[in-house]
Image 1: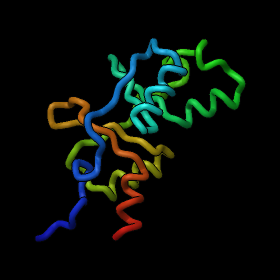
Image 2 (image 1 turned 120 degrees about the horizontal axis):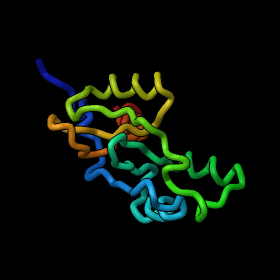
Image 3 (image 1 turned 90 degrees about the vertical axis):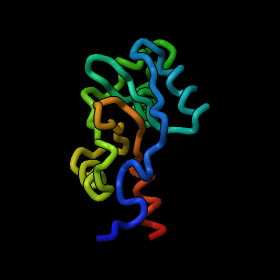
Image 4 (image 1 turned 135 degrees about the vertical axis):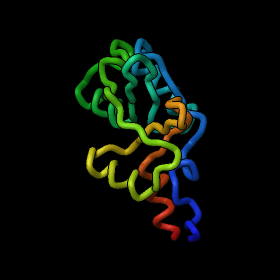
Length: 128
């Protein structure tokens, strides 16, 4: 049985996974996302989290100071994650179910190795 190209997360995920400390300011997170041209950062720890560009926009819309807020104040935790061998359709279903746009990717050892965004999957379906 033949599999279609780009059918699993490992085929489209961005590597390496970019991280930031929970103690960093939201302003630092925004600058890091801009520098790396990405929309999310993994926040490692005993219970990992994620901060996204949407979290930063929400903070700004609320009139909160990104210099005075820390990543831990706005990040989502716990974070949903997927394995490298998960099929793209399953990841898309998870994103729809949980109403999220980014999923950290773990290898067989449980280590974070990448990030997949809804746009990574969407781009493939648009060009299929």
